[in-house]
Amino acid sequence: MIPNVLTIAGSDSSGGAGLQADLKTFQEYGVYGFNAITSIVTMDPSDNWSHHVTPLATTLVEQQLTTIFAGKNITALKTGMLGDIETIDLTAHYIKQFDVPYVVIDPVMACKGTTELLQPENVLRLKDQLLPLATVVTPNLLEAKFLAEVEDITTLDEMKEAAKKIIALGAKNVVIKGGKQFDSQEAIDLFYDGETFVTLTSPKIETHHNHGAGCTFAAATTAGLAKGLSPLEAVSLAKDFVTSAIQHGVTINSYVGHIWHGAYFHADERLQVEDK
Image (cartoon, rainbow, N blue to C red; front, top):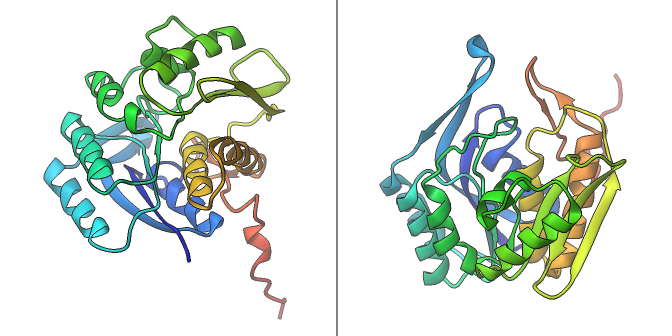
């Protein structure tokens, strides 16, 4: 049986992040993907590729979720960019009402390359309503800082302290994505289940082709859980999946380079057409 997996997230018009990244990842993992769109993100090439976020009405999000949950059971669910407090509450309601077995919370708070929160008022609601439902929560360093209410995270020890605070909010597991931010030859992520810390490392890849990496990591973790992996196994495979996707990134436009979701499972080799 193919597991059914849902993403509740924003739409990235450039195709590399958001629900587009999620659905591509789900397909690569062999799970059946559903999506509920919470917002539409665009970039303006005439204004230094500035981001613009347009939230969808909560009533429209609910209509999508009604359609999705009227079918087969959802095995696993991930959240990405949630437009407003009402949508956060709605998401929590559906998770609890339908007793979704695996929940991955990707606490999207800012667009890549920025440090300004998209919706500052959402952070407290997310912590209160969604983190206690999370099988795994996947913040980057900026998001972990706001969730844990700490200063800038610049060391592995500071990551561990933030992870403890996030677990105290109710999440079963947390992985803080340090990525390439530290002065190291390795990309470092930290997994914590409330008892044991596991440091996940991979060679640092010097590239700007990393658009969608965070969304893809959470989506891969979600799909891994749906396929029966443990949280640590799902997170570890997700890291390998994203690392390969970054290594084989592609140029989309003059501003952004996307990761290639088909890299890890060799999508480019599936259909070979002979030259005529």
